Length: 178
Image (cartoon, rainbow, N blue to C red; front, top):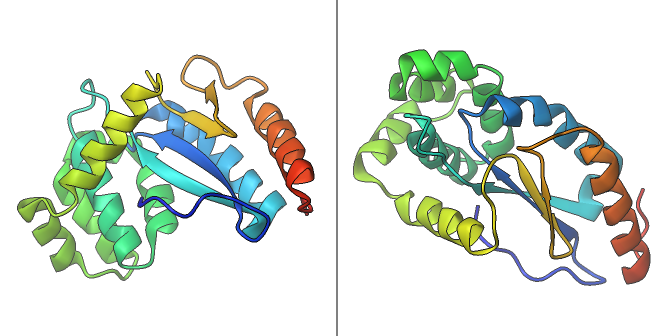
């Protein structure tokens, strides 16, 4: 997703979630993302950042498709639908990405065209390059307040740590966590 203005008293705190849509660990982390959204609402912006791994053949295309879904206003529902069916993506590839768009009522033809013309490649490349520059090596990885939390190694206690850091940063900025 595109960068937003820096967080401050009038803007939400940003949590970057480095994710790969063919990653089983990211599917597991989806419950944490939902819980964070439910707990913080508009106080915190959860921002998807792409980190496709070479070991997953369709991850780069899935990242591009997610960008198209965000452009069409259904980014998170699309991401959740794809992550919920990682095995289908592995088996079916790009046709699955277009099918999910159709299932969600998005413009599937535009998805197909976006995957062919590569209009979102630069965004995905930029996310991946930034991730590498800050030390992301696997997914999911959260970056909050400049601190990196690697969920690709272990997700045990990760949501609690993210919530703890978020609460501290919100308190420091004078924002309410609820």
